Structure formats: C-alpha cells, structure tokens
Length: 171
Length: 247
Image (cartoon, rainbow over all chains, first blue to last red; front, side, top):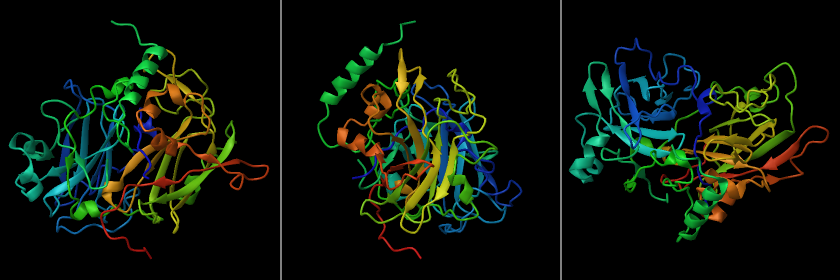
C-alpha cells in the first residue's frame, strides 16, 4: 500500500530551493534557453508559494544518468532542476530544448494537497498522447516561443486549467 | 468580511466528507475545502491517464557529490546543541512491489521544538533556536534505508480557521526510480491529539491510508543516553518499468 502524499506547505522556501537549482545549463551555454511562466490559481491570481521541478532529456534525446543536480559543476547535464515561484508567481529555468517532444513537470504548492504531474511540450511537437486530448485542452500542455525562449504557464484551476496527469497505478 | 470558521465548523466539514468516502482512496483529495488554501488551488477536471514515456520511466540521479553525509544530522549544524527532544528517524524507501529505492535523495524540513520554522513567513511568536535550522538531506543505502538525527518538532498554530493547530510533523521529499513516483509528504508522531482536528492530515480520507504517515516508536532505534527512535517506511506507487537491482 503506497504512502499518501501531503501538501508541501508554506515553509519549504528555506529548505528545498537551492543555488543553481533552476540552471540546468549555464546561461553562457551555446544552446541555453529560458523556460519560464507563471503559476495561477482558480481566480487567475499568481501563486507565490509554488515549487516546480523539471526532468528532461538532453538535446540529443538521451535520458541523463549523471548525478550532480544539487551541486552543479557547470559542465554536466543532469536533466533535472527545481525552481520556486517568486512573489508574482513567476518561475524561470535555464536549460536546453530536449531532443524529445516534452519536458516532464512536477508541481507543488501550499494549498495543493498532493503533487501534480504534467508535461511541457515543445511548440511544434506532436505525439499520440497530445493528439488524444480534446482540442480545447491540448494547448494547455504546449509551450510557446517568446524572445527569451519557451513560455509555459501552469493554471491550477478554471477554464484554462492545465491538463494534469495520472500514471498507471496511481489513484 | 466573514468571521473565521471555528474548529467545530471545520470538524463538521471533515466529518461530512469522511461519510462520503466510497472506495479505497490512497492519496489525499485534491478538492478538500476544510483546508481553505486548497479551494482555489485544486484542479477541477479529472486527471488525464497517461502511459509514462521515455524520460518519465527514469528518475534523476543523485550521488555523493550532491549530499554531504553530515547533512543527515540536523543537531550538529551549529555550535551548540539544539533544544528539545533529540530523536532518530529511520526507515526504508520502497517501491510498490517492496523493492528498495537505493541511492536516492531524501530531503526533510521541520519546525523546531517550539513549533517555529526558520522561515520569514512564519509569524508564530515562539522562539527560534539559534542551534537549529531544521533542514536535512541524505541518500538512501543499498537497501533503501534513510536515517536522520533531529529534534522532535512542536505543534504550531496556523490561520486556516480559528484556533487551528497542526500536529507535529516532519516534511519528507522523496524520489523513486521513476519520475512518476516523485512525492512530498509529512511524517507524524504516534498518538497526536490533533490528528482528528487537522484538515491537512484528514485530506487523506481513508483512515488506513493516513495512518501510514504515522511513525512507530522503536526502542531498537533508540540510543542509550542520546536519542529516542522512530521508524517509518515510505512506499511509493508501483513502478512501470521492469525492476532491476542497481549495482
């Protein structure tokens, strides 16, 4: 029987975020891109106490198997990063575009009783899962290009609610 | 501005929802209004079933360069001994089939013995302890074992409703062997009188499921003249990838 989750609560800010957490590659990396957006609640208000984690393949589509995400050496691509939202509900990662259709995303927040899983698809990506979604919800999983890189908002509730995922074996 | 609900109001809501429980629910309800902050923060549309693909079948790798072994002892991070009841908390991280999750990251954070977090937004007028930060990390061993030395946290008030108090708890952040097993939860201590009153604990509506968050006192973990001991195993949801023993 699996252990239930619980909310990350309001006080993770001094424990979980760490220096370099959002920088999967240095900004000086030739392929560096910004992945950023805002986390919003059901009233359209920004969520200033959310924590996002991304997990992705490298530019060639390989799954990273190297350690070092917590103390980055500036050379090794570990594929994993963590960013807290700021007072305006914004988050920002520096990474490379994966050689795969999507980046996996986990969302935690005060007020969210359990983690949520979703996918950040590249702007022109398609796959069977994305195609299986109703047209009016598909766009919530697709990032858009802006001058900085990729933009992806997370909407926890409401009309533009992000599609969140359940994997086999999860209730 | 309406008045803050009382504990009796919240307890009545908790009881009403508990009656509506139909099937075995392992995880907390995302839509759980007694926890007021959840009202605008829970998805209202059903979660979309997805078969994990490629990256989702793996978890990030952490190693010795990520975590110093000293980070597992929260009582030695400052010059003096922290106040409170020194405890050892240990257990195993397992997948749904009982296989150990080896060499994986476990992170903890908690209030001090007075129920105060070292966080700017914690306004509870209880004393900070200059010898206690309340943050730790470790990697699990080959058999999935984690182990922390810390201080038993105190219960603390919060503003969900009038006279709201959280049972004492330690936040745990754990990874599995797959992305799909990622989770954050809370460890509680046996016999806490606040369990029935706490909408966060009660958001897990199945009593057998929420009792899995309560550690067990274990005298074999207790150390003479040093610390009392608690044991708590964490079982992650089933893996979708075929299990292989890691080297």
